[in-house]
Length: 267
Image (cartoon, rainbow, N blue to C red; front, side):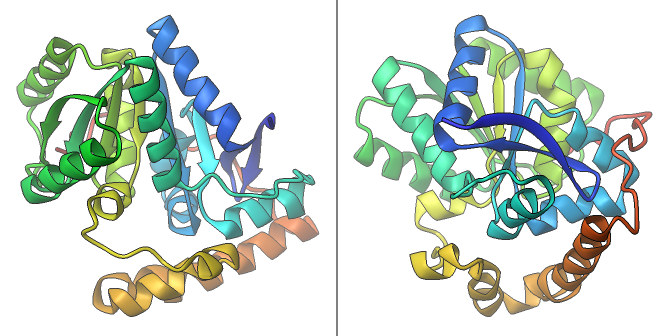
């Protein structure tokens, strides 16, 4: 089991951690009834923190950020001699938490995506894990919540008595949501990104060999070029260039960021 704390990747603090330790942290928060904000960041997620000081602040307040993408794992190894042999991939972490929940009787609340995706996700999870308790599932309204709407959503999640919340709003909205709802919910919130679509079977995952060699971005770019070309063709080279600056000591990346003055209330 590996859990060596957080290290800076371009100013974003990422945990040197493996699956076992990540799942253990999540279960500890369930048992202690304490808040735990969790995200798994690939290059795009890290770059949202590089380019937006408020988002960097939010990310660096997270309790657990795992290296979702191979380039983020490689960065931890290159910059901090982390010795990580595997990434902690968001969809796989989500599935491991579901397996834990079925085994131990913990319950889930699913928030985000669309009603058809949530319906298929629940069907697939219940087929794989028949005893999994899903006590709530609510699609995104794809609009900003009002303060009253936020309060009502918090109350619905609390009334469900869910032990764990999965939020799938896409990066960076889901990380903003987890940051803004963390203290009110006082339970693990996992920003699981594409896990809803992948586990629902709505979108294909890259072959394992492409994932292993850090080429998942290429698979997703070919599958969704119009939506993702800016993300991968602009941000990936920028990430590599900035990583070289950090490795060579030519630039110091600030981890402080700027505290947001108001909630964005994504819903």
